[in-house]
Length: 263
Ligand code: 3PY
Ligand code: MG
Image (tube, helix red, strand yellow):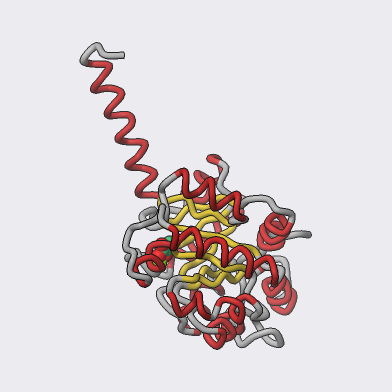
């Protein structure tokens, strides 16, 4: 049976889009089914930029899988220990921040897979696929399903783009637009030529290596339209907190206007 990771990769390989949400704020297992009901196909459990405890990979990740939303984790760094804790408890892949070199890409790709494909330490049981598989079957299935995405967030990563893209075990390249623009000296200039050029280069490197391209960071719809046209397919829309605030502000504005008798 095809799992969520395989479906995700195949959808992107066919040129489809995968729309995701950064889980920065939610602490309950309900967020997976909520995102599923809204049409999201993946989430990024954010351990880099939120005070989330690794327990959320288990609580939220497993419920997301049951709801049909692929739970990817963004670890704080590249440590094999942190990656093992997130993957063997419920996350089904990684969005790895600040992958600047092919050596780093190789190391995180290996850290995310069980032997013989990698070096991920084998746990006593693996919960992602229910509890009916033997440990050996579950580990083999995990190796087929896990998705590993390298974040391109610096000038150094752009300089090493082709080698990172060619690294076996890296499924996709993903621009972290904020870090990238800050690193390039163009803080906050999401509509500028630097990001446009990076999008073009990342899409080309991904295409040339049979990988997919994605991005997170921008909010400007015009930037997204152009980036989608350029080939961006794995889309990190916003985080759960900003979506909540957007909806909440909209409701308050509606009732304030309605109460004042305005249209
Ligand atoms: C960035 O924009 O730097 C990101 O990490 C997006 O999630
Ligand atoms: Mg970043």
